[in-house]
Image (cartoon, rainbow, N blue to C red; front, side, top):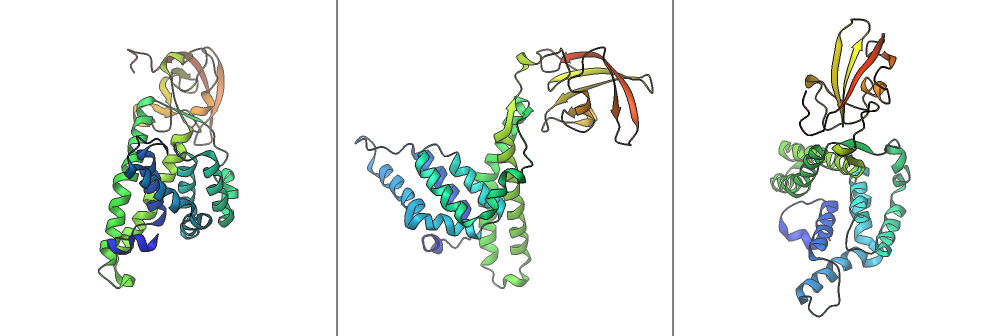
Length: 278
């Protein structure tokens, strides 16, 4: 692939080139032998498939060898989720990638065994928008910046080049983080929020038995948290101790200071119900 991009004057990471090709392949639609399919479309699909499959996926493997773990896993995720590659092709490519990346074996452990997490539909929409912004705008712009800086020469003392390369690492790390989080995110359906017990999507009124004060806070997802507005991530160390408790139940909470404080749950509301407000 290097020769194909050599004349552009822009340094573009190999993994990003492959992801762009995969995205373009999805845009073209499913491969078909239907005579009504434009010849240009069939030709483009064939060319992209050839790049992916050539010499036992050598182009893909070369990119994977030169990528960081985060970048390689992002590419693997893009292949797994591709809408037009057949399962056979996906398995073949993934097998080739795993043959050159032993760190893929630690993939599930690297994520700490994290499972589903619950968020509001609005915060999930914002996360998806950020993900697309990174993939389609920020990363391509960064690649152009790297190419422009590299063209100035003497990379050892080229501050713009090194700054752009550092930003590239941050962008790819954020893309992988969002990709993983979005894949595991489940939007809370307001109509299914139960007020029998405290859980994601509920608003809680509880009495602090040490001070006697009533405290009110809402438990939502990691992207919805706003502690200054008394909106807490339901799985945070403090809020998670309220999960599953019923109105009228008394329990002890470990505070961040290490102190143990008694609480009594007084009321549980559906925080996402239409018309609900703090």
